[in-house]
View 1 (spheres, one colour):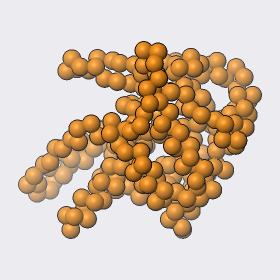
View 2 (tube, rainbow, N blue to C red; view 1 turned 60 degrees about the vertical axis):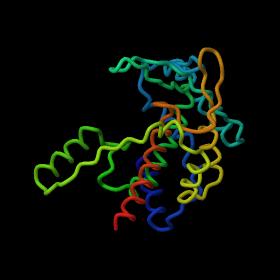
View 3 (cartoon, rainbow, N blue to C red; view 1 turned 90 degrees about the horizontal axis):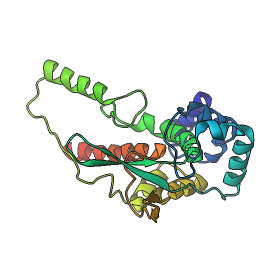
Length: 234
């Protein structure tokens, strides 16, 4: 999707607020997203693996695209699972259905094209080709080379569990004018969670470690937050 991402980035640079994004969700980009999905991952509530989806790949992608054009496509609820943390507590994971992973893969590429040029260079979370190790190296470099008086280590308790969907959409609409693109974003946010055979609504927050695009939503929120802090600091 590099050609499409470059085109979107050019539109962002020219107009700021972009529209007509749904045209980038087509057979070619969905096929590419399918190919990028890793094999052997846990299945979602649809119980479909990459290999099974690929047995009738062209037919499945054509059906998916047709449903998306008719706005008949609705994401499955995310399957909730838990794994132990180092401190003895349990960490919640969310496992999307395979088809939802394919769709979200394209959405994430589009969001990256829009927002990567807007993010600050000191921002590392949930971004392509950046990691926690890169952030630590940057901090270490500043401590060793620059005059540092304070180091602030802050954590917002329950941040990702309590993100307000309405404000999330407002943030996105500030940069995205395509109402149909936003419409699908809303569907992912309220897709729900399946836990112990029961469907739970997601009226706020993003389910921890799920949804390819939800991780990127977090970075968008944090970027806006950082801009406010920098503005107040000056």
